[in-house]
Amino acid sequence: MSDHSRLEAVIAPGYTLTSVTDKIGDIVTKDPIRKGWVGGLFLGFIGLQLFLMTVLMLFEFGVGIWGINIPVGWGFDIINFVWWIGIGHAGTLISAILLLFRQDWRTSINRFAEAMTLFAVACAATFPLLHMGRPEVGFYWVAPIPNVMGMWPQFRSPLMWDVFAISTYGTVSLLFWIVGLIPDFATLRDHADKAWKRNIFGVFAMGWRGSAIHWGRYETIYLILAGLATPLVLSVHTIVSFDFAVAQVPGWHTTVFPPYFVAGAIYSGFAMVLTLMIPLRKFYKLEDFITMRHLNTMAKVMLTTGLIVAYGYLIEGFMGWYSGSVYERYMLLNRFIGPYAPYYYALLACNVLIPQCLWFRSCRRNIPLLFVMSLVINTGMWLERFIIIVTSLHRDFLPSSWGMYYPTIFDWSMFIGTMGLFFSLLFIFVRILPVISIFEMRVLLSEEAHKKSGGSHA
Amino acid sequence: MHKETAEPSVFGILAEFSSEKELLEAAAKVRDEGYKSTDAYSAYPIHGLLEALGKKDSLIPWFILACGLIGFASAWGLQVFVAVIDYPLNIGGRPLFSWPAFLPIVFELTVLFAAFGAVFGMIGFNGLPLPYHPLFNVEAFKSASRDGFFIGIESTDPKFDRAKTAQFLKGLKAKGVYEVEP
Image 1 (spheres, each protein chain N blue to C red):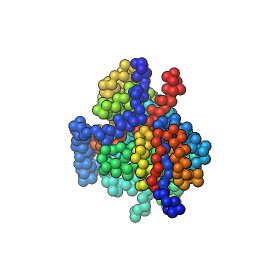
Image 2 (tube, chains in turn cyan, brown):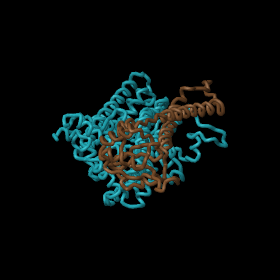
Image 3 (cartoon, rainbow over the protein chains, first blue to last red):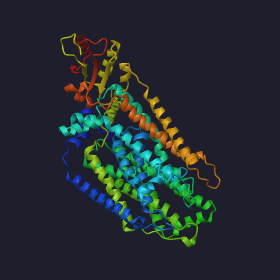
Image 4 (cartoon, rainbow over the protein chains, first blue to last red):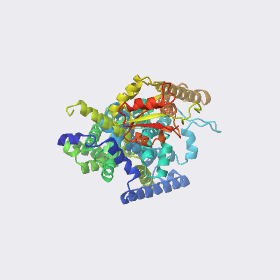
């Protein structure tokens, strides 16, 4: 095999149906519990406790423990919400849109990316509930539950659309993920080493036996689910952007927001997939399945979406000036020379300037650099939401009601806490479920074999 | 059940094949022989296997469409009931039936209901969850979730004959032929 085709391969040569099953399945059933894993879960668990303690403080003392004020009524809560939900876009994009486009490189990363999506959506979903401070009351504002107050939520509000978009997205992603897992549960049921494991996996496999008739329906609905999830992925961050774009606040009221938010979501989602995938493939020796081809392609997707995001910044600036509105123009000026200007420049560096090195193949194939790049982009995307929310709010229409926003320790503990939640779930996931879809790897092997027998290797 | 025969009854006969290609060829021959109560088993979906077996079921997309339409109707119903009928709010004289503002939720609920229909439809149409199935009595069937390829002919088939069917499957170059206890 030539050097080039090795780099381009979606799976290393020499694998059979049996060995691919064992290699992935063994991580769940045979691999001993390792120190690195325990340490990672422990750190995640500490973060989770920090999260729970902050939530307790929040319910006891209210949102005053945060740094929010008037005029900056949206702080870290909404920044983190948008950041997490953005990260949660990669999974379903990979599993649904790339399925429809028949991209064979999605196969070995979709399970993990979908799991990451679910956990990121779980982190994101905590914020709309918690930012109300009193979710037991606020729940009636966002969910159409008949109540003795005789009130109903306002369906014309983008915040309501958001609740429906996020909950639909979370549910459909979960369904998609579980459907993908059923045949793998059957594999683990039949091959796990201990009876109790076989029993547990057996319950989740629901009696799946690989019948051709079942596979027929399975493939039909998998494709239809992908078709349903494709517009859904695009709709979610579009609707999140409506939370801003429908408002009159300078810097928010723009039509470029939906596409620019969606591109930003995919950008940060792929960055997070790389952040997690690079250590994972090394730790569990999955380099044969998550190859250079995958990393290279994901880097290209990041470059493309990063350019769309850069275009968004450009149009945002142009429209601010071209609108002729004094408030819009001041918002722009305030971004460049206001008190939060350093963050704006940091954002431009992280999201626009530094990722330009992904144009070069040598950068895309340099794994440590790619890892650092993914962290830089994740930081940049967080800063983007900070800039959009805080610089627009802190100096809006009336100079007499301008103010500054300073996060408190509880803002930070909440943010770090959701990371703890995220990593706890992720570490548990990699041990109890196959991180790569085993049956889809078999399909990939079968397709590769067909390609070979049809091609020059016959 | 079968009191007329002295032999214990069987669920059917299962034949194991060693590759995808052999499975497809055998499936076509089983169909041509006239067997109806048949099924094939593999660890991954195989393109063209259902056609080879002569089975095709296209009911499920209609079921998903129906679920999607229910979601569509529910979203309209919910929003119109709340915003127009039960809790009308006059905001600057704007119309109560402000339908464009209802579209995002209509879209979301259509997708949500259709997705539920797809997943539960697949599980339901496939007769899952199924706690017991006779095929799992065959030790070799374990590999159906790993690297095995199987064809089963069930005893409910009018053409089924314990000895003849087993003989026929052996003639298809099967790696192994097993009787499945009920």
